[in-house]
Amino acid sequence: MTPAPPRDRLGRRDTLFAALVVATWGFNYVAIKIGVTEMPPLLMTSLRFALVAALVMPFARVGRDQWLPLLALSVAMGSLHFGILFVGMKGIDAATSAVALQTTVPFGVLIGAIAFRERVGLRRWSGVVLGFLGIVVIAGEPGDFDLVSLGLVLFAAFNWAAASALFKVFPPIPSLTYIGGTSLLAAPQTLIASLLLESGQIEALSRTSATGWIALVYTAVAASIVGHGLWYGLVKRHDLSLVVPFTLIAPVIGVLSSAAILGEALTREKMIGGLVTLVGVALIQIRPRRLRISL
Image (tube, rainbow, N blue to C red; front, side):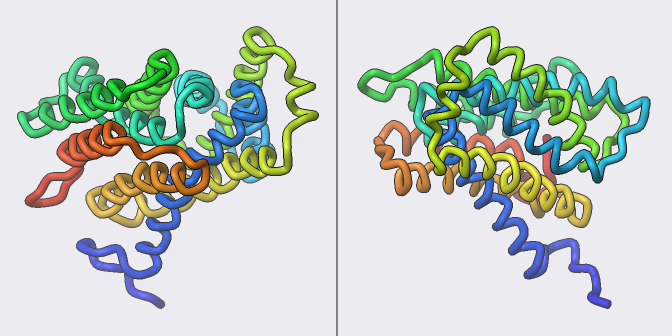
């Protein structure tokens, strides 16, 4: 029997898993951008949720008392996070979205301080300021920059933080139950939103290329089921201080893969703003001495 890895290191297997997760999440920005370019974003979100639910629900058990928490999470994390994120990413590049979505962490600090009266020290407040300052730098990029789309991605980041806060209110939910249940409930929500706010869905799907369909499957299977499945396992086996810092690699992979695959320009504002935001996120998440997560 293989001994459990010591608490101050992940071990080779789990280090590989952590690297695989962040790489999967990093490339997910490229997949989303490809998908929303070929099909209406809310429709793509609904199809993504439907696929995840179809694959996961046969293996998930949902208790009677879990449906209400799952419904609340499906609205916050499903419709208001992923739905709005996909809409926002249609108007801005994947690299900017990868950086802007990291404001989930400073948003989480603000929600914790206001809603749960959590104490926030100077270091974490500095991280909050830097996290948002980096976005201001990116927004100052010269040219025709879509501030509305950037605002939607930031709102999606806020909703991710709000959904995370709900986990403090609700009883623990197993990972398969959470992934499958929220997807099952979010699929009709985003489909209705698509029918009300979008048009030409059938025509768009008929013109979607094989690359577009692969992108959709990637967001559902690789990024959601595989990525989150491996991540929940890592969180259960190790201290958060060992695994959460890996998440800082995902936006870096997102930015670099967007440039390599989609040909997006790595402007000075994007690079400086992204670095400032990531430094802010690192200040919030990592304590230098004991490496404990402070959020």
